[in-house]
Length: 450
Ligand SMILES: [Zn+2]
Image (tube, rainbow, N blue to C red):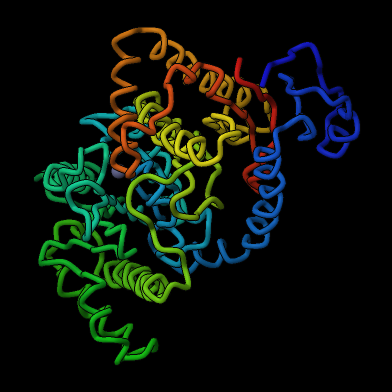
């Protein structure tokens, strides 16, 4: 798709933009909302579908308010960019948008990450204002059936290393976000950080306390003998109280009532996860397949409604490593596009990156700063791919990784296509901003060449 920066939409509303831009141009770069007429069918379907997701997001506003009112913990979730993990909120029964989710490859957030520190401080300030505490879930992932090759790619499937890192980070969160008295004792706690492990092929999430772990398998193996009612909930709550005892360091500086209320919030998420895992086991919810099946990369923020497994990688704009994360996810999407091309000869080779950030990122009511930020992200990712494909060394490494990924998916070497078709034009960018209330993507630029 080529860019035609000469055509500007002279409209300021979504409907007007559609009416004004029936000029049938293949793609355009504009500083305002553009319509979807020039998009290729799959991208068009993506944005048509976005309207439905946006409507659903708005319908859930009351549910979001109720959740926040009823629970003491303001949720912050750290999880992987992996497309197997994008149902995390759904698996916990959370309304989309109640949790702030930060996807990073393998949760490798670094020793000190100033951007994320600022983000967390912002969440804490807001929690303090409403007499809440930040409940941070730090989730790494692995596979029960394929531990050697379907764990976290960012950790090269070495779950022990991922665990060590997660234990370190969670301890640091619980140590750092407290007020201490003159003796160094915790006087007030602003954050409770918990380590969890997601077992992707079972759709279960294991919670780790200082006195053991709460594993959904323990309850699932009882075959629903307790039903779904109060008996089940009280058994879950009891397990949480055992694993997270009163002297658990993650609760120091919190009152007893607050601990009880937080345990209840956690137990409710756990219970929802049991129901979710049962539905997956019964085949009512699609099971996560092994390997990487993602076909699109969602960069930035505002993607809460995209919660299917196996379809979307999500890359945050808040991690300094976002380019590397776009390399990892881009490689797998490329691999899937190549497989599709082998199966359907006439399908084009496209790796779609959708970049979106909130409408008013820089200043209240101002879209320009947000658009600039989103465009800069897209350009940086694009430039990185151009550089990688241009340099012999990085290009050969990409080819070698693709060969390995294709073989892992059962495509023998003899069927591998000619990789020289992978040019920078294969990477397609869709840049948008979205209002926080609607999460409706307002497309501002498209095209391979930004
Ligand atoms: Zn991962």
